[in-house]
Image 1 (cartoon, rainbow, N blue to C red):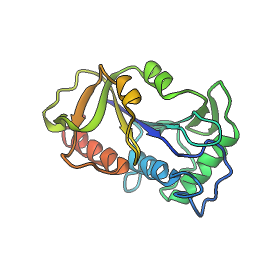
Image 2 (spheres, one colour):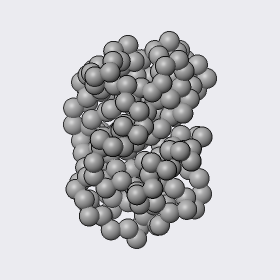
Image 3 (tube, one colour):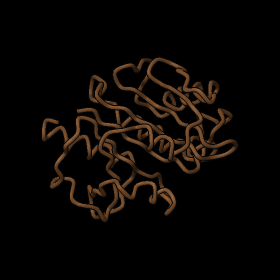
Image 4 (cartoon, helix red, strand yellow):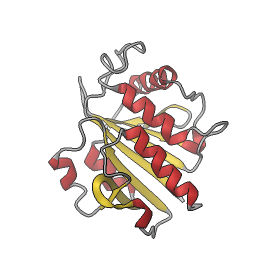
Length: 193
């Protein structure tokens, strides 16, 4: 089963002029994006090859910018936030209307959140604390897409784009996005999916 995680990063910078020493401030909470990349892909001594991570950056100066990380194509990725931030900076140098590969397995485009949702395909699940328990859901698709927000969550406009998505909860508490990704992986690892 292929797992795709889509994060909407409301404040993450859309240019590469941020400091790797200040991902939370200067990067517009780019630290959240870096942590999510880490959680989406890293195992103890390997990467998850069946996973894709997509982030829609909505911060200044020129949103949106979408980055797509493909597990079975990734190279040069280390688990630390600085390394991931450096690869994101490199990707932001190459942004254009057409999706472009910046480094192996990392692609950049100017797609919006709604365009990403329209194009992704598969069974879409909106991770939300008020949803159905993830342990009780049945999966009918070979490709499952998990949508989550950053520290600001999703707006009502964003949520309206997900009106047909299944709303699923991994906890009654509001969790950090990177923790949500790890919990989802754990649930599916235990089910051997």
